[in-house]
Image (cartoon, rainbow, N blue to C red):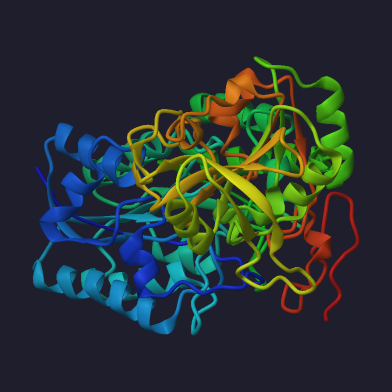
Length: 502
């Protein structure tokens, strides 16, 4: 039986986003549990689809004891503030030092954190943890599929294990796999051999979905290679919104035999490189997407529109109205957009009252240049307190607290409704509509502030899914970002132009 320290620090950083993640963002959690410390970590994550929950369950089942450090997560945004990073990383390191000698460390990390003062947030945290425990104590971390895996992360950790699904329906399972790698490392008495290879192109996150090709086939191949070679293997397509030199895709693996690790990583990396052209994905304008949905959508089989560039799960604030404005202009029937994150309008709807009509100025709070709130008359159809439990595969078991919510119907386009919420969270669960009495399956058009996670709960009912290029900071095509610090030669899209410096 070993004593294993458990902590976590989750943030996905879009360096082009408008809002930074301060300490209050980690206290709020953004749909995840708020910041937790010590013994409070385990009950806070228990039962949720969270890596730490799976790791704790597995470590205890394997007979190990655990000691909680600190665990915190926040919605994706721009850089983590210096204050937030130092408070959370400081709590992890301080509690680790206070715990005395431990046999190993498990960390629940994202892998794409950029702080105001460190490009590689996870690398810096791992360096501080390594300094406390020394070179002989194993450190294993679970990572998000969108990790930008750096040289420091590979060098400082004895094991990294990433999600294999996007939507991320295997988060707890990934924590379990990380725990199993940690247990195997402890039994072995020395670190596993490791191998790591990066790739030289970026791809937008909508095309990283494991429900569609090429990632569907690549992750199936990963599983086969892992079984054949008997190792732990990961592929991270990266988070192509972080402007620093090590942003990008990676394949990495751990095995008892170095040759096996190298061979498996080389084989999978070669398959990813061969699939480069297949990562290209068609993007629709708001108007074209709405028109197609009007032609093809029907109750029971709606056309689902992904408002990907304003995805709160990729650094957007969920408050742009470009797609909603197109819906109102084109006047589809049985159409709904959710969720527009607009606390003032949600509060105003509660003040107006159910069944009443008033003038609202919706969204555009974060100030995307050239955009102003969408003004018009709306009828308040339903109100909610925003407290409910997710039921879809991604948010299942999450106790969501989204603040005052409202369902509004446009007077100008009576077939169009919009769901308002007060706390930033991407729209990836049907309960976000049902909480307000609207079953999204009854609609012909369902527009969602999400890039891919929505597919876990919405794709099974959808006639088709269209990815929409509407205003927002989470650009679907990496070539559209004003990069300044990528490594020289990185292609800005599948078979796209290479970065040659700002």
